[in-house]
Image 1 (tube, one colour):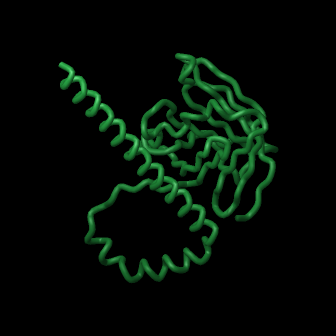
Image 2 (cartoon, helix red, strand yellow; image 1 turned 135 degrees about the vertical axis):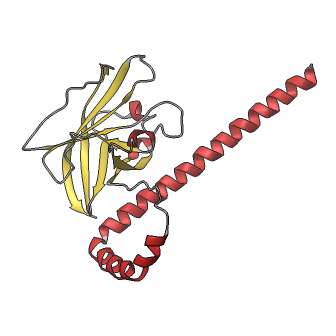
Image 3 (cartoon, rainbow, N blue to C red; image 1 turned 60 degrees about the vertical axis):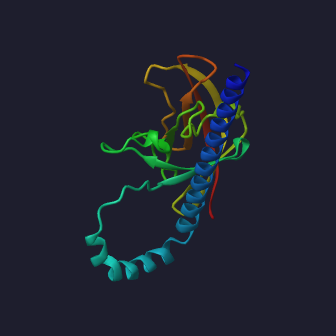
Length: 205
């Protein structure tokens, strides 16, 4: 029986180690993708010229290839307090982005427009729980969004919980820029945490 117990312990430890390595590798890849988005959008004019030349050369080859499934970031979210830097993606009828990345709500206004940039992500312990540490941010912490060559800096002005009903009241503005982050509260069953930030600075990066 003792031998059997040691086998179970060893197997459990091995599985935990494998899972941690798997999550770590995903984090590395996602960070690289976020940095790639920031680098590409900061050199958008140069990249567009390069793409035009490349497309002329490989367009016939692309026709021969099978279509590939890719996640194309529309912006990058960074929260230094919780060491988070991830790409965000729009949902479509054929793509539920919440299962792959930080998801942009369809009512969102991107940071280049006045309004509210609304983002969702899972919490918990899974490999896609990008907002698992969102409950650790506090008022006056910084949030950054990289979008189309501009870095937007927000300051958190509100943090509260709401009942998980599928609906949330958010700030609607035509004169200011806000960001809203929403995820399930792992410490309060049936509740979601809402973080609201207001724009401080926007500058080219």
